[in-house]
Length: 108
Image (cartoon, rainbow, N blue to C red; front, side, top):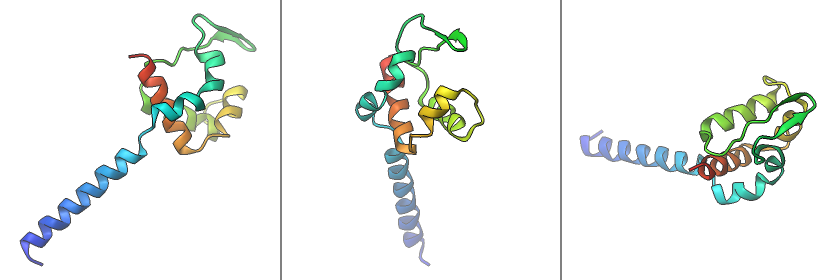
């Protein structure tokens, strides 16, 4: 194969990878409506959940990758919290990405 063809192939592969990564990222605007139920606990300053009693973390400004990772862990049962597991089980990968993008941007 000619060097010029190898370069074209490499550029095509790079462009495909970049565009796949771009579409994998969440859409904060779509995440705003998907995060509606999350805001009941995670959007209230100083909120404490009574069962079990603990401070509920605010998610605004948290890194999207971390939020997706946490949601995936709740969905698979690696993290245990009945309410969060019930919420996460209903989410697909794009939902998680969108919600995470929304929370990341509202803290900025």
